[in-house]
Image (cartoon, rainbow, N blue to C red):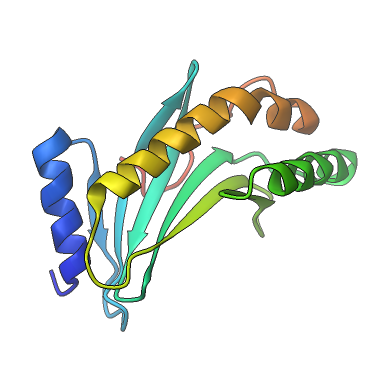
Amino acid sequence: MANAKAEAFKKFIESKDSGAFGVEEVPKDELHTVLFHSRLKAGNVEYPFIVTVDDSVFVTLRVLLDRAAVTGEKRSAVLEEMNRLNHTYKSFKHYIDQGGSMVLDACLIMPEKMDGSLIYNMLTMMMEHLEHVGDGIRKAAGIKKPEGPGLSIVK
């Protein structure tokens, strides 16, 4: 693995929970991006998520809340709820992606040394956050439960 931070995170997760993550190196990527994918359980809902580690100072954590295409009247209700959450919870960014899926992001700064426990702590915070706000987001979208397994790279 050409990315030292990704290699360190891989060793960290293998020591904590071997097999909990799928690992995918992005081929021919100048930042040596590595994707670590798994699922996060919040309440009775499992959300697919990705931890993106590259040669930049940033590590991103992305949780797919639902793949349903949010359009029309529901889109404005969802955006209003997500804007409220973005204003209230500064650690997270809620948004609708280009395909209409609802997403939750967090970004950590790790300039040189990988801190796997910081990533695990943020994932725990995201899980607790979703236990608190997930139903409200889905309600705004008119969704009773997530529609499917989510991202195509989730194992």
